[in-house]
Length: 402
Image (tube, rainbow, N blue to C red):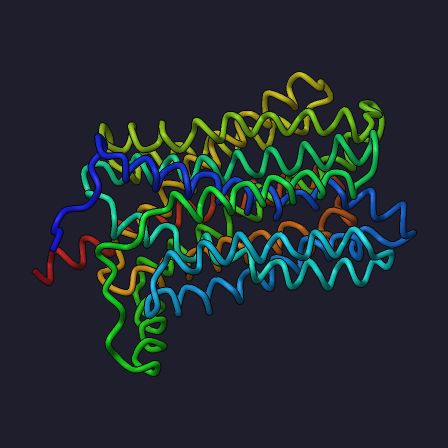
């Protein structure tokens, strides 16, 4: 019986990193590919912006439900099966979409797809935590989270660029073909679990595990941070295309799609976060990243396209740095049922996605771009100050009790 996880110099380590990285790239390309299509659907189906954003918000809601359900079952039945099925079943809605012409059917298929997409994020972090040696686990986690950014960049760019040049169907066709290739690779390369121990308690006790995490004040604060970060990040990227399509920019969707290459700075953000957190405290690096994110968001208010692009690069770097460190904090804070804890964090994270894509639409419509940005930045900075103050008080209280 093996007692140690995969080391950096073992083939199994890199099979895990490659498999989860490719799976994550496909999942997040699929999920975020519909964000730049919101203006396309608005025009093609003659619907409102709020209605056209349902392809994102409905997928987000079902993804949240999927994270809870699949995170729960992955603690009982293993991680690998859910990762493989997630990739396979997420391909099918794309295939059906190619043959439908009603927007409500597309929205329904996105709702179904949101649930199937959840399998990879629900199980991957827990799988990494179980199968990889602790000393080299942060690198694997950082690479995995970097591929979240890579997938988001690829999905947004392909959808934005191809829908302008050809059609939105051509974009999802390419993503679907990529998904088929990823599934074949993951099916062959992803190692079986060596250290997974299925939960031996009843379903009721497992459900109580969610309650245990929700009664942990530190985890609650981290879950809240996930919501706030995503509202700021998703809100910026969702409504920025509408702003850039107007004077003084007057950009086409094809041109706007190239701005998604700013995500490259998010790809390098997570590994840098891992390196910095080993030199400084995790909380300090995370706080800096959040202020960096806020600065980048404020840059999008400028009338210079160069400054806006610079701001988007800063936004992506700051966001993915903060996100990777927050996800790592959740894994360290949860003492057991780590799959459920990771799922709850991702639930909070995607509540932020839903809020940033649809629920904050009235703020944008009533206050405009400037009002929207100022409010989201104010909320983000206020929350991180509250978070740090609460963490200090909590640790002081714990030290006195000991």
